[in-house]
Length: 136
Ligand SMILES: CC(C)(COP(=O)(O)OP(=O)(O)OC[C@H]1O[C@@H](n2cnc3c(N)ncnc32)[C@H](O)[C@@H]1OP(=O)(O)O)[C@@H](O)C(=O)NCCC(=O)NCCS
Image (cartoon, rainbow, N blue to C red; front, side, top):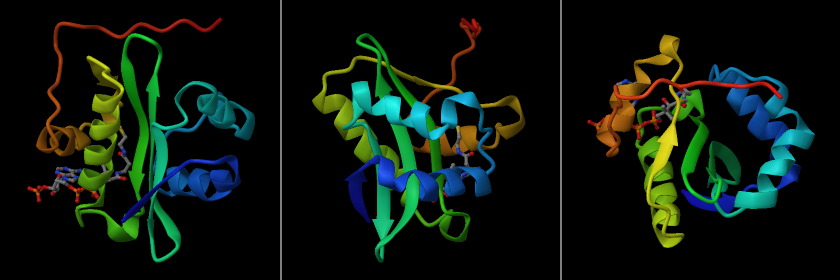
């Protein structure tokens, strides 16, 4: 699989992949908002390409202190074929190169099955934290 940094021309295909993979999409996923990710973390937001087609995507991000992972997906036709692991290995490498100390991600409670995947690629769950949100 070839890794290519996201550019906005890929938006339609990436959005379609997120949709068919069941990612909850909202106001942060419009074309304008997705383009804003590139202002800070353009080298952590990339797609995976096989036979000239985007088959996987992940948004890695860095806020100056912590790294984050959002919206990792692999084309449903190709899931369980090792591509998710390859995407995360590449992202881990990029976080390491940027000397980011700690990276977080969020799993929706109705998607808990995916926790097994993340554990297999080196992540651990936290039960000492509660997530809070604020809508400005
Ligand atoms: C999660 C996802 C990206 C994993 O990609 P993938 O290409 O299917 O994963 P891989 O084939 O690289 O799997 C790596 C390992 O995790 C396991 N695994 C993958 N998905 C799993 C799941 N849902 N439950 C349990 N184990 C899983 C694989 O069996 C494999 O195990 P092995 O190393 O023992 O063989 C993909 O299933 C997906 O797009 N899911 C829908 C979107 C989603 O939920 N994204 C995460 C948002 S937080």
